[in-house]
Length: 285
Image 1 (cartoon, rainbow, N blue to C red):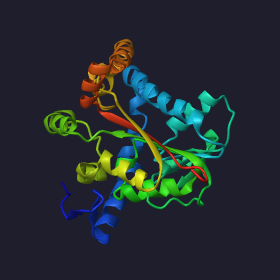
Image 2 (image 1 turned 120 degrees about the vertical axis):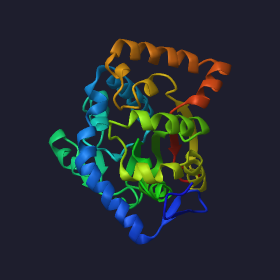
Image 3 (image 1 turned 30 degrees about the vertical axis):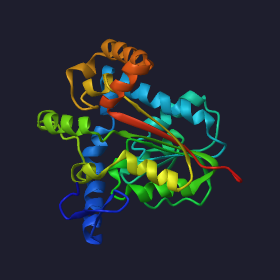
């Protein structure tokens, strides 16, 4: 489904006129500098949702232990919450941590000990084969031409480098749930950006997987977050988001259920998030 004024591209993404794309990119920057900037702290502001988001990011932190030496770049870093969790997990050891974002939030990164770059994922101002890992923690679906953004991430990775993508699932279930729940959840809560609203139906997990395979990367994919995360209101306002004990119990239950062969496979059909870990081939690989 293409947004108004857009058309489906052969790789599954959406194209629109240059002027239209430029307008949405400008609107996205303005929204992120204003509303989005204020919302960046929200997932960590409530004990229950904080337990969920820290748990989600801990999986990414664990995956990054297999990344080769070199800078780790988070695209769409916001105020650097993930980078901060990663730095604390590494105990100050390791290489340079870099945040890339289109909003003014990136300006606060140097004070936290991180490098900050104001840029868009569609055109990373980084040299070819210059970083050990690239992370998208819920930011890739904010990029209009996300296949190009994926290729850009691959371009800047060293041989053997790791690309981690953690994003919302687009499935029959998630589309139905959003159709039913969004008018209720977001009636009093502004939580979607202009690109969210107009391009989210074009965001496809299968497109990301296809681009990565075309680029020759070895890909692993898992679907998660079918229980605790949706009850937080997907980081938006929810009574459950205040209950840390409940969320931790649900996270533990979710882990146990996911490990069951049959039940896990069924429940993953109702997952709300997916994680892709893609490895750039080494020389001669």
